[in-house]
Structures are given as structure tokens and as C-alpha cells.
Image 1 (cartoon, rainbow, N blue to C red):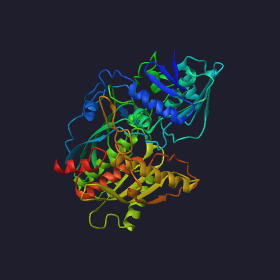
Image 2 (image 1 turned 60 degrees about the horizontal axis):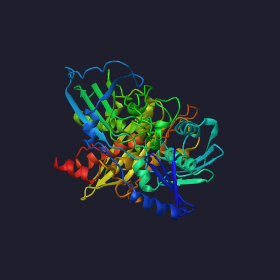
Image 3 (image 1 turned 45 degrees about the vertical axis):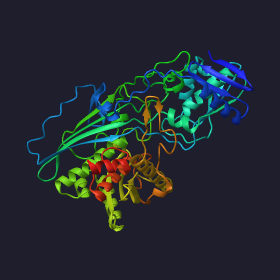
Image 4 (image 1 turned 120 degrees about the horizontal axis):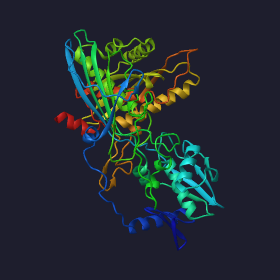
Length: 511
């Protein structure tokens, strides 16, 4: 049961290690919360694990599954990585690393709740009112019919950010203070420290080319925690265990241990299967246990990391084969729409004289999202300054999304996705120590700002009468890959650990 102490017009709510304050005014609540935070003493136990992140991703206990044609894992032994084929003219290996990413919602999450006569009403800006109702009812041991969850516009919500958690926090307070409507708002510090992040990943690739520059052997293993942590019935575990405060209540729920997702192109293995024609590719999904941070769905799931790795590696292989990156990709495709998309991008960049000029580099990348949605080829032009900072000068996007109903909306979605992916690629990473998250504001968790937004040229491939293809997240992976390739073209350094910031460039230059 919640414990409520009232003093000076302020209610202090305690349920196990969940602490909150309620007051008639925002100012009084903020001041009281600050006093409570300073007065509280916390038993941190052993704190968060601080093992080197990328070492943990490949050394920890894991569930490893082969991914077969069609992009789904199967319950079978993982085939061993064999020696390169006898006919290989060159064999390359590379390891790519992606940190934890935040959703980074500009407006912190919030929720409102009212508990009256045994009935609970919750107002939220989350993505699913019925899944949240099931999670709240289970956590509070109420009948679902006694919980009403209503959507209202609020701060941005995509994937699984903090909106569900803030709504449940409001519900916890409302039950402790019946009859009073509770508006609970997370601070920026709360949002950065407690939202469920996008999993960190390691991608290990090896490939061989023959004397004609054709890929004759391909292996790709991806390592990461789950991307499937939404509080929804029908998924592994219970809905309530996906809400962060349920683990700190007086009667806490155990943290979830998710099983591997087995559908095609889901979670860690999204876009692990390349669209290119490689004979008998060896593809492996590794669901890693014992990682330090709470994770869930963030835009593209594993597709961003996998596509950046594949598309960066394709450029490395093209260089080894002595073939330009566009031709090299076309040589490994038999999908005409994929070829047309890449060719259109190459034409746009050639017309714009991409990479011409002192200190400029240009790069391309391509993917079809989930191998079933929109095709997208992207280009990037960058400058790397004397201070080792990457400046995005221009960007190009060619997208085949089938028949287009709203071209302006699609272009906005593609441009916005490119900008977010550029921010992931160049700036973003969650940091922590044993006492908790240390990247709790926009200085310690920098994002792309207006002074580094490139000029973007976007072309939609006209496909009247063709099926509509989902295009919401198709641009992110190719955008990151194109930027990585452009940096290499500009300074001759291959970066493999994101973010590609000043420290990463200087470290690579000294390596």
C-alpha cells in the first residue's frame, strides 16, 4: 500500500522505493521534490554494471540463433564460421559498434490520473491506450474495467519512450491521493535517466570477394539486448513488468527476461539479411543477457545498426575490389527497383557535383527497409574540420515507396528521418557509471543542432498503380551508412564505433 504523509500542503507519497510529492501548485511541488530528493537516502546495492559496453555485448551470456532466408531466426545450432572459400581473392573482416540511444523527446513525458470511487482514469500521450490499461490494471491489481485510459496530445511519443511510465507514475500518485486529479510531469533529468533506451549493438562482418570483385562468402553476426519491451498483452512476460516503477514498489515485480523474437526482420535481426545477392550468407542473431540498462523499442529497432554496418562494409569491399561503390552495389542486385533507386541517387549526386571541393567527402548507402517496405538510397557530403568535427553540407535521398498519396508528407518523413539518423551517427550515446545515468541533459547527451543540418534534395520514384510501401523508417540506416562512407572519403579514416564525434576521429587518427 502507498504511504502518504502530508505537511505544509504537500503530500509525500511513498510506495516502497517510489517517492513522489503532490501539491496544489507546480512551484510548490518542484520545491518539495527537490527537498525530498536531498533528504532521501538510497541503497544502491552494487550499482549498475560498468564493464566495457562492447566487451559485454560479445562476452556475456547470450542466446544465439541462425537467421535464414526471409529474415527470421530459427531454433537450430549456429553454423561455425568456416575458412574463407578457396577461390577468394581477398577476405575482409570488420566490427561495427553502436551505443545506447535515447528517444530524446524534446518535451518530457507526462501523465494525468484521477482515482475516485474505486475507478481510475488516466490521460496519456502514449501510443496504445488499451495495452497501457492492461499494464496498469495488473500492476495495481485492479479489474481492467475499472481503469479508463484516454489519449490526449502531449509531448512527442514514438517507439516506447517514457510516456507509459509517466502515466503509471501519475496513477500510483492518484491512488495514494484519491479524489484529486494528479498531473505528473517528468523533468528533463527524469526523461533522460529513466526512459527505456534503444539497445546498444555490435555487428561483426566477414566477406570474401573473387577475382572479378563478386562477393562469394558473407557472414554477419549482430549482438544486442531486446528491442521489444512495450507493455502490451500477448508479448513475452507481463505488461506490468514493462513499467519502470513496478520494480521499485513495496511489492516489486521482477525485471523481465525477454525471449528472442522469432518473426522476420524483428528486433535485433531487422535488416540483418541483406537484399544483395550473396551465396549462402551466414547470419546470426545474438540476444545478450546481463546488460546494464533498460531497453525497448526505438525507431528502426536493429535496422539502423545492421544497415550502417552492411553499407559501410560494402564500401570497404568495393575499395578492395577496385570498383566504384555504385557499380559494386549494382553488381550484387537483381531487384530492378533497387537498381533504379541507386542509379537515381547517383545521378542526383553527379549533377550536384557531390564531394567536389577541398576537404569535402561524399558517400552513398542503400537498403530496403525490412526487405519488404520502401527502397531508399542516400548520399552525404561532409567536411571534417581541423577540430575533427563533421559538418554535414548536403544530403540526397532517392526513395521508392510505391504509389505515393502525399508526396509532401513523405518528403517530410524522409528528411526528418535522415536528420535523426545523422544525430545518432555523429552525436548521441547514453553514458552511465555505477550510480546511474550521467547523460541527463542536452550537454551530456548532445543531439544534432540547426547549425549542422544539411541541404537535402529528395527524389520520389514515381510508381503509379504499384502497392503502397511503408516508408516511415526506411531512411535511417542508409543515412548513417552514407555519412560513415563520406567521412572515410574526406579523411581516409574508417570509423566503426558510433558516434563519429571529435573524440572518435582523433582516436582513429592516432590508432
